[in-house]
Length: 195
Image (cartoon, rainbow, N blue to C red; front, side, top):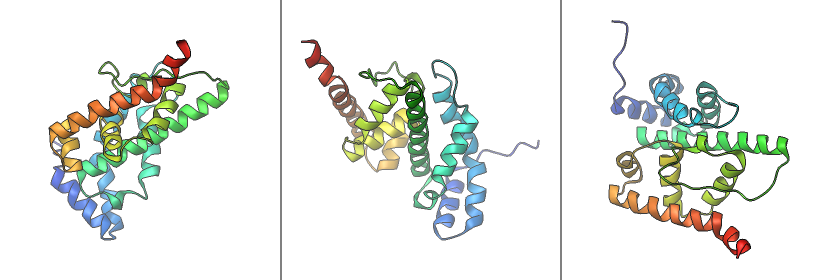
């Protein structure tokens, strides 16, 4: 009976608001409440990583935490916080990919798809992840947020819609548009080279 009930979104949102108001203790109470959810997000990505594991879910959460430390007060609510966490995890994974690529000193064109077959960034090798990261920075802001929240954060369309203040259908359209744009961005040069 020592197991405590899972936190309600209201609890997390209240702690975020308290942190925004300057309560340092709220930040200390916030992370334990969302820690398991962050680990689930990290496990989805790390569990699908190909090749030798360079990062475990706990390490990914901890590294993302360090990136989040300055951003937590900027979150408006639980969904917004999870989106910020997804972006921090993206940054950690991209940093790791850069390190691996620098060690290999490899080059070449990247092959990246955001098809439904890809569960997340763990399915991509270092070069692919770096190419995706560069392309994401060129996307429309809302479409980038949809891709980060869905692909890197594992959030559902409903959660993303709530976070962005749009309808689920808008999130679906943004996802389709972003995937098409990223495909053209990442494969455009390759098609012209083979012709």
